[in-house]
Image 1: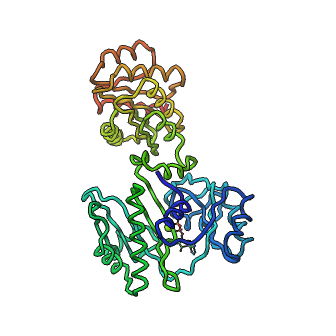
Image 2: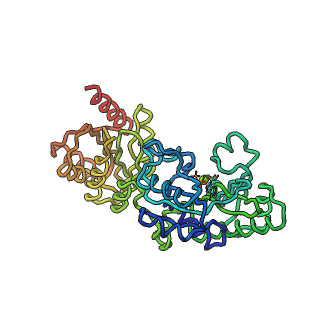
Image 3: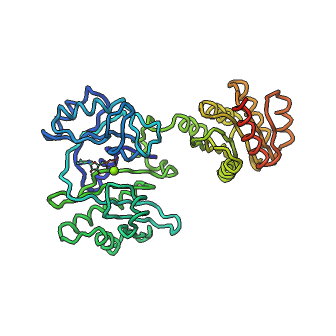
Length: 399
Ligand code: ADP
Ligand code: MG
């Protein structure tokens, strides 16, 4: 689960991480009241979307920049009015962009230098990796590719926590040496680590972390991602969830216990088990197709959930074909068949459908489907099913 920059900064402040003050607004009616809480003069206006690269982004109407420094309150209101309701495209949003529903007014900062700082889980070592770089304000992937020597990493064992030597290595990597700066960095990194740990974060990225002209440190941007599996014990974090930023199909799916992730392709897949879903996507690619989603109905999905899964898949206008791939272990193939039949009653399946069933109650499942009169092709194996759906979609397109 992601949150907005302004929400992350409120949390940072609670952990003693220095941030500039600011106020978030959702409508023009709130502009004056919000701006009156900031010092008079220049104001930074920042579009709040769950994606980075806003500064270099462009709105679909041609307006440039999702981060604007306004010289006055009047100018700030103009920028904010242009952003609200407008769609911002950045290299992280995809070409369709994201509608800006919240704008953040914040204090301008006299930047001396921009740095990069992030905390995330390193699965290979089961440790928390802290990544720091003197190259801030640019994507870390770019720095890693071009100037990897400018990146410092430390690996923190969660059992013993953040140690002084970790902090020293990071501070040295960032080139901090003045006593006051080292003290500030110590407080900042300790706060971020504690925040990461206590709030079950999956990633905390501060890009840029900055030094001001007077030598102080500050988190100028904040991107935070929480571990969804820990949300049950993070009620205050769940309260920050902005459903307007999430794919409505994914929200619908989560209500029925389905794991659904929308992708760019045109062949939808409905599979039981995450591993099988991954291999189904791979094999669709192998035969020249492109998966439209990842969908795992799980081992204990009900007939109703399967029907819902179909409904979600078919609500995606990009979908030009469906591959159902079920290996019935705990899941019964008959239940999947009933779900498909139930879906066909309520939504029109107007794209090619290939079904491959194997395992528990497979004969009954196949029989139910055959008797239902639903137009479908059956696949004997995973490869056969994938090949058939790719071919059928191609044929339907050229027809
Ligand atoms: P994004 O990463 O989405 O582009 P940032 O918050 O990192 O958004 O802002 C982009 C750039 O804008 C920063 O690297 C910084 O140079 C500048 N900037 C952002 N906030 C401020 C601020 N409060 N004062 C001065 N400059 C800022
Ligand atoms: Mg940034």
